[in-house]
Amino acid sequence: MQIPGHIDPVPVPRAITPREDGRIDLLGLSCEQIRAELTDKGLDLKQAKLRSKQLFHWLYHRGETDFDRMTDLGKPLRPWMAERFIVGRPEVVEAQVSSDGTRKWLLRSDDGQDYEMVFIPDADRGTLCVSSQVGCTLNCRFCHTGTMRLVRNLTPGEIVGQVMLARDALGEWPKGNMAADASQDDEDIDAPHYTPDGRMLTNIVMMGMGEPLYNFENVRDALKVVMDGAGLALSKRRITLSTSGVVPMMERAAHEIGVNLAISLHAVTKEVRDEIVPINRKYGIEELLQACADYPKANNARRITFEYVMLKDKNDSDEDARELVRLIRHYKLPAKVNLIPFNPWPGAIYECSAPERVKRFSEIIFEAGISAPVRTPRGRDIAAACGQLKTQSQKMSRAEQDRLAEEKQAALG
Image 1 (tube, rainbow, N blue to C red):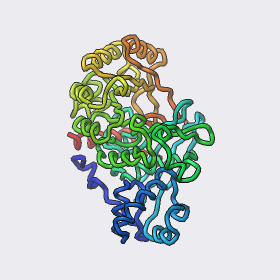
Image 2: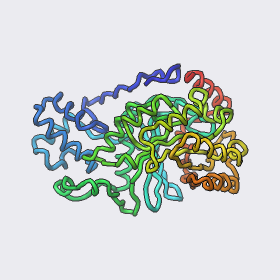
Image 3: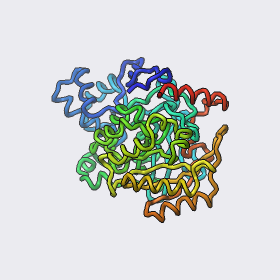
Image 4: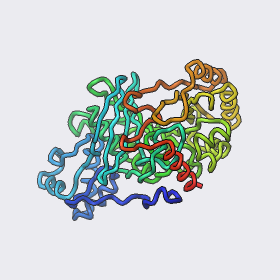
């Protein structure tokens, strides 16, 4: 899907930049796509079918990048593979670790574009926040990433590459022989792999840079690779896709991806949401919540998450909390609400609600029987907290931010 207007002149999907050495990067390809590449390079169909399954296992289950260490490939075949293919990783420009253990990576693509990903460790889980675009289509006014121009969509390989790189850094690839790996049943596949320092990557949230539903095909194809039981095998119940409200794509996401849904709601009135989440002017709250009610995968076991950033004197009153409860009940939504204290950034025009105000807001929602935990800010000291992702090369004055917001809004209609 190409975004209308001049802010996204790049055709979608973006063509992969050919390597100077002519080799094909297998990162992000499905088993079927790997098989097609093998046949294109001269392997007969029977060989290609067998070798593609072996390669897929080595790439995504074991995290291997060196064909010489893929021991079930015949010795003559390994140099043949190395001459024609490569298993890449994103280039790491900078890696930072917060005082609370949160990790952030600044990555660079082969065409020189920068994007970021974040790993958030907790006692019972480890969550990777994955980006879907370089920059962002939207201009949510509380979000630092929203002040960036959209450069282009990330490819499936660049999206999957974030997961692969995180597993590399966390030392999570399974050890042992292939026979043991191949004998794993479904329960073993879903079991978490603990890292050497006691953390593990168990969950993925598509909440990094960009709007995932404006890069639908690439996000879908990447997540299918991530969920494939023969490789990374991450269950769809452990993956959450967050959207600011691209209503026409939500049902398609349910059928073609089927992961958990999160909505960046952040306001309960048209006036306030038009200001802080301007896509609301195109797809209003009522239309958005009806799409949530119609979302085929939503039920009490897989509730829709509503993300709600707490902004002082903007969206944090008792009346706002009660209206949020009313809307959830009116549309009969299986829902939980994540309350997010605003994470400040240079040039932001909002302030975070006071802790006692956030607490009271949460209590009103809890008293109505709806879960409303307050998210603990993570990684603030390395600008890795929610709404703070923005590459350091991007600096804008307030006037420039306003002009960019007007451009984006005009392009989106």
